[in-house]
Length: 322
Image (cartoon, rainbow, N blue to C red):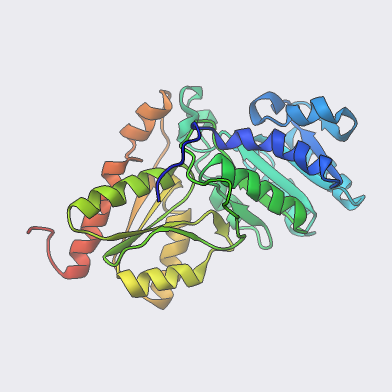
């Protein structure tokens, strides 16, 4: 599967327009903002529906409390800010008021990962998936492109219970066309292969597809799964990948020891152990452009290619030499 003709777009760009669409479709959507609506794009909803938009200022914990109150009153409550603040600054409020009560609150965090770039180390959310996946009953989604992000937001609005949707600042290629239909809890197999599988999320999905193309030219057939629903994870697709391809590499813009890699490894290790590798973040980054940081910290096509070669070599019982 290749990218479509649409220009690249940041997944964060999906929020405002999708919320407007949901309201026009008759859903009782309200939005709570913590002073970053321009960046998250939720401010577009404010411009259309000012009476359904509530700004709490730089007070993310209050944002969660207000959202829970609105949800308790029967509203579909969306709240949004940067991922370093949601969940970083208000984890206790999310744990007690959202997760433990099952509140119908939809949390959309933008500017996740190190691709935030020049904002620097304090703005790089590389722990958020681990935090949110630790909470029972919270559905966690990391869309690969703006089309999937739009549909994930719609599904969240129409599904009872708490959601966390992770979006990014950087523009990424559009993978899906208008015929695409997001299925909650189901991985998308974007490419088939029998030698190894790459399970990717977010902005690492496109590099995973490019890596699979490179590997195909070298005689390695690589399956690519877009695991957009991180929790609950599609265990059936993971089991099939382990059974049918015998080697797995995960790719994520997150700490590998606590993110998708850790969750996939736990499942595979307990069911169908196979050689595994991981491409992701191993520590805090620094300030720089998104491209510079992704290159420096190994979130690249080349890194995925090398990791796949390594697991395939281990599967075959060789050192990788021809």
